[in-house]
View 1 (cartoon, rainbow, N blue to C red):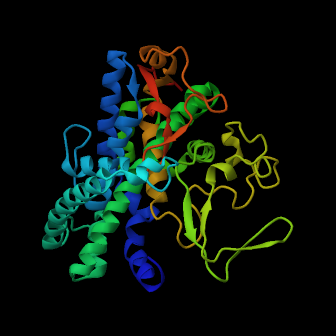
View 2: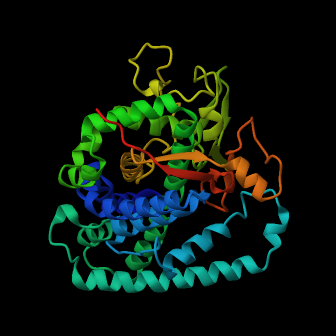
Length: 399
């Protein structure tokens, strides 16, 4: 969308994605993250290898369902037609970003897209009908879903509005689960490589929530603002997003918009697709001292410090009017997940065992990293093989 239609719908959806409203919905998010925690605990008890990306994806899409639709997909525990169709659709959306020309000639792909779209639209049509008919079951404005707030703002829903709502809901569900799941997995991967940061992070959580991890959910449910008292946690998330930005973005060039080089040369963008290379920008030593190091301190030092980030160089959610609408939800969800899991579990990578099970002495690496990013169709960049790891119970930090 662009122009007046974009402004209209962005205005309608903005309240539901505000930081304040997301915190109001924290009890709903908590329920889904606690299911994820139970799944992780079951793997810890079995001592088996888990591909962390899989349950993370299911958790994130269930959270997105609760926040966007006030609807429980329950895909962490049972089959759900909507989430199955969405995940399938994503896997078949690589045409256009892949160098494999055969993907453009695959006659099956359009049929799969049509079939998955039909399944999703049918499912969402039922949900939209029920939500519109009820006018939103929750009478508290601060606990309404994003869909309920949109219906409240938009008033009568005609066929065109229903189509726009359906398309945006699918986009919110997609954007709300895939990239957030990938970043969460990378967060635990990086912490497994940096025990000093992990220890400091656990200490921060204990200072805010106390040493009894069992009461942390109830504390958060009654006082969601506690999540805003975790500067190191936020710094770790931001540094994870710097090293492993889950997605990139493109913009359509305009006649009066130019890219300007260091020498002042103006490059026209008209009739061009301007694609921001987030990974390249975030790994450019011109803007980032000690660029390949995992240094959450970058986000804690004062201006003037050598590590202080260059203005506009960090942009995983992009910038400007069309920045990521769901960034507050993503940051809140990642903070909540690490708070609930880090002091109860030790998650370590199991790539060596995974390679042996696959009959390989050593798996592929990029820049010495086994968990390098790979694309899942049209989705975000995930760790290779969905990050095989092992989980063990960890005795919480005592302070």
